[in-house]
Length: 204
Ligand SMILES: Nc1nc2c(ncn2[C@@H]2O[C@H](COP(=O)(O)OP(=O)(O)O)[C@@H](O)[C@H]2O)c(=O)[nH]1
Ligand SMILES: [Mg+2]
Image (cartoon, rainbow, N blue to C red; front, side):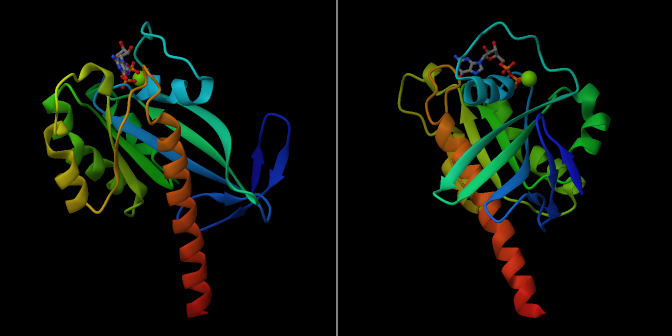
């Protein structure tokens, strides 16, 4: 399998649960970001990759992707390719094709809009259907900077527990928890990929 990067052509081995092994210390994974329109998907990705927040984006058309690298320990480097899927219903059909090969999903809602939280099960279902298996996902409540009083964020903690998924409350505006979020998804998808490899070796 060839992956053409900006400066390199990698010879990579496909690993199970989505992703590629580039070398003994470097791996690449695809992560999809989903959620209703305007919950802050694009802002969150831009905040992480480019380190700033702007409030004048035009809404994402179709799909865009971004990539960056992170070290999860001294010896392990991950390249995460983040796919930003348009939330509008008009892109529903198009979205299906872009989930392929994803190793993990960030499912986002806006902590100031209950209806965006209610959409989460639908997003989980759509992603699982198109990816073809249940992959790790993180539930993300964004725009924490807009919440002034104590909030239970619509009960996200209980919901996340029932889905056996972690959740994080973030702000793309202030940057709160954004680095943690991407490191967490990187660690989770890598762990899952490594576990499934060792399981397979046990069976063989
Ligand atoms: N206050 C605040 N506004 C945000 C935050 N994240 C995104 N926004 C704003 O919400 C709107 C939608 O953001 P966008 O990233 O385009 O959402 P997307 O449709 O999910 O990609 C924009 O006006 C952003 O500036 C946040 O953490 N805090
Ligand atoms: Mg967008």
